[in-house]
Length: 506
Figure (cartoon, helix red, strand yellow):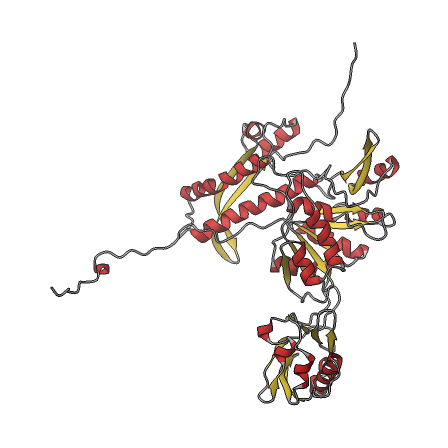
C-alpha cells in the first residue's frame, strides 16, 4: 500500500520551544585587579587569568606581576579556599604609543632568508601604506630583519613622526617582533595585513590578525580618575584594586576620591611605608573604600595583596562564609609591626599591617586590624556590602531581561519581593546580615524615623533586616518613568576583635 502525505500538523497545533527565565547577568567576582605598566598589556584592555601558571605563562616569572600573583594565589583561607582568578589593566597615567606585539614565535630565520620581496599593509594614525621590497636573503639575524622593516616604515614621511620615528624590535626572550609608533598619544593602529603585491610576511612576524597579536591603540596620558573610570566601565568584575606602579601622594588621593564616589563598588588597596603613611592617611582619611597597608620593608613585601586574596577566596554561599579580615594569616609576608609603640601609632589611624605577637614563646603573625578609611571602618562589613549590592543588581537585571514586562503595580512589588528574598536569606546565612544583634536606642530611633514604622527596629533586631519598597513616577532624561524604589535596612555582621576576661579565684 502506497503511503499518502499529510497536512502539516502546524496547521492545527504549533508550539515554539525555548528557555525562559535564564540568567543573562552574572554576579561579579571579588577578584583583584592590578594596574600595570607592563608593555605586554594593551591600552584599554582588561586581561583575566585563572591561576598563577597562566600569569607566569603570559608575563614571565621574574616580574612584579608574577610576584604579586604569587602572593595572591598562594593564600589559603580559614575555610581552605584560595583565589581562582586575577585581572590586569594597563596604566595610562603616561601617554602610550600605538604598538603591535607578536604573541606567537617568529618564523625561523632561514624562512626569512627565503624572502626577497616581502611586503605587508600597515594602517597607523589614520594612514595606510604598503611596505614592499623587503629583502632578507642576506640577513644574519632577526635584529637585521627588524631593522630592514623599520627602515621601510620610516620612509613614509607623510605620516609624520608617528611613522618616521617608528621602531621595530626583536625580543629574543620570547622570539617575537614588536612594532611601536614613533610618538606617544592618541593614534589608531590595526594589525598589519597582506599588501596588494609581494610575499606577505605578517604571519612570519606574528603580526597577522590570525596570529592574534597584542594590538594597542595610542593613548593620551590620563588622570587617575579617568583611568579608574575606564577600567570600571570596561569590566567591573573585581572587588579589590591596586596599582603596581608607585603612585604619588596626590595620585593616591585622587584615586581615593574616585573610589569614595563609586559608593562601595570595590576596595582600593594602598601600600604605605614608614616615611609616608601619616601623610597619605591624613589626605585620604575621609574617603570610604580606601585600605592602607603598612610595609616596613623597602623591597616591597606586598602585604596589601593579602586583603585582596581574602576577598577573592570568600564563599558567600556558605554558612558564615562572609570573612572577617582581622586575624588573617599569610606566613610568606614578614611582619612589619613587632612592638606596641608602632601598633599604637597605626591602629588609631586605621592603617593595617602584618603584626606579630607570641604565645608560649612562639611568634604568631597576622593581618590586623582590618580597618578602612572613611565612614565604614570595618573591612569585612565594607566588602560584604560590595557583595550584597551586586547580588541585588544581578537579581534586578535578570528580572528585567527575563520578563516580558515588569508591571508598575502591586504585582511589580510582589515580583521584587520574590527576587529580593533569596538575596536577603543568603546574606543572613553567610553572616553579612546579623540576626539578633542588640540595637542601641539611637539606632532604634533612626530606624523608626527612616521607615515611619514604630515596629521596624524590632524586626531589624530579631530578624536582621527590614525592607521598604514603593513605585513612584520620576522624570528621567526628560520623560516620566515608573521607578521601583526600595530601602533595605540591615544589621551588619560585625567581628569580635578582642576578648577581655576576669578570672576570680576563691
